[in-house]
Image 1 (spheres, rainbow, N blue to C red):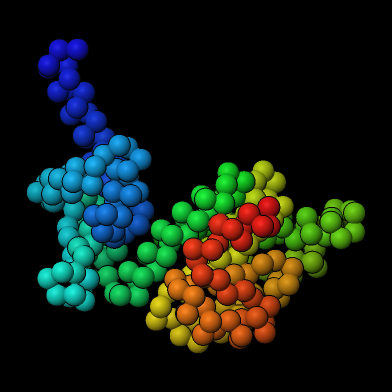
Image 2 (spheres, helix red, strand yellow; image 1 turned 135 degrees about the horizontal axis):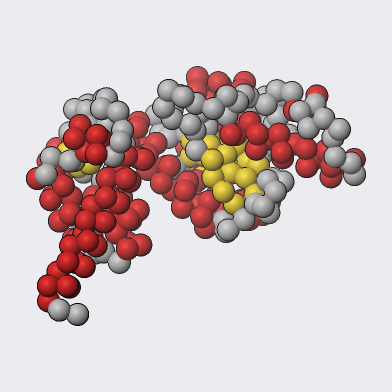
Length: 265
């Protein structure tokens, strides 16, 4: 290959990586440099320093911006990268505070974001038999949500295991109480979705009101489908475990989720 041809190839690869970074920020709203590298560069064979160089170039092109997290650690605070209005437009997204705004992500949102990344990794570690459903975003959300249909499938399979017959009406009385809409996550087994697990992220700073709202929301299906509240640390799960267990929910440190899913399917 000629030197010119190599430069053209290198340029196309670099451009593709820039697009990948923009796509990742479009999905996650905000990430640190290392999180972006772990989501894209690591798999593409890019070094962490290469990812930082590309981010700097995108910033110079005014396609991304860097924000500091509430000055939590002064100058040592990690930068959160977000799409600029121009970057959001290039990605085909609406220009609004969620995309390229000047608002600094709150500490609670930062913690929730870190838990989401860990959640995705844990479901991946559980094996190819598991898939993750994320809460729908945007104004046009499906009604009912995908989580609803996955829970219906899981309860139908449960009826089959217990009676030896599939329900005559897949949306019969055994499915009453399944929330039609959901802002929580759900893992389900492939290929037929015979098993489903409701996954609720509970980052540090979430109060008893949040926990109570989830207990009430899933009260009708606990005991028939695992409903798991996930915590970033064991000490946090202990704070709510007795209340959750009393109402049929499970409290689990998020790093143990993969083993839990493997034990089910």
